[in-house]
Length: 159
Image (cartoon, rainbow, N blue to C red; front, side, top):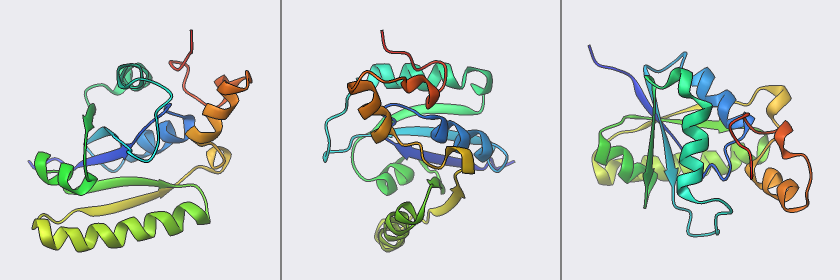
């Protein structure tokens, strides 16, 4: 039986309850989700790759047989081809995310033809109560000494 496997890409700097929500809901659609930590050359990460992987692993340890964590460098669509995955899972919080994700979707569709590996993108809207959470805001709360624990899984604790 062919398994439905999706990649959920991001920097997860740090993983938030919004990310967690999308993955848990995505497990209703897919047999397995690969949380793919990508290198974003446009920003410097606040937390090391090792720490982010640990937080993600600890957040999903109950689902560990259906969750895999990988890191990659380069285009997400190239990574999909490399590991032979045909689905991308993406979360949308608001209209700004929608416009951004729509453009990535169109670019990926153009690259699909070049790479001869079709990848379908599945969008899930954030749950209403988590739609305002972003790693950007969490990092700013941390930098300013606020209580970030309200917005991240319990595994994410800065010591």
